[in-house]
Length: 171
Image (cartoon, rainbow, N blue to C red; front, side, top):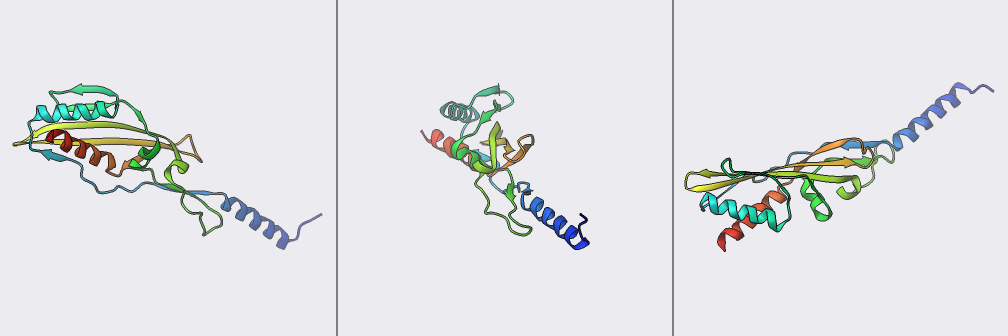
């Protein structure tokens, strides 16, 4: 039985709609402005000790310490719970129709295996000591787990480090 041109076009159109309705639209993360470093009116040794306490208090595994260079590096950290919200990994929305998308899922539903590395630089800056944490976040998409995404920091962890140092240096 031969399909008429109209039926053939309708069948192709229905197939196209079905495929398009199952697609996932991914938008990469956008860099967010936040405070990247902070200076403290304290000696570098005092800031260094306070920073080591922050690492210890949070059970962040240290993989490298070079006090002369002023660098502390963490080992790979697996993020869970609220910590998955420390970075922006972009977003993936599942299409329901061509122009409609479902409401964006929270990060823990869109991505998994959130990981982070942390480097913190401590350097004397005149009469002050400057601290600059640098974070490297990655995660995997639930719809494409073979893809390792580079995420961008939202500044939450950096602010936490600054606040912890302020508190410890006042003690």
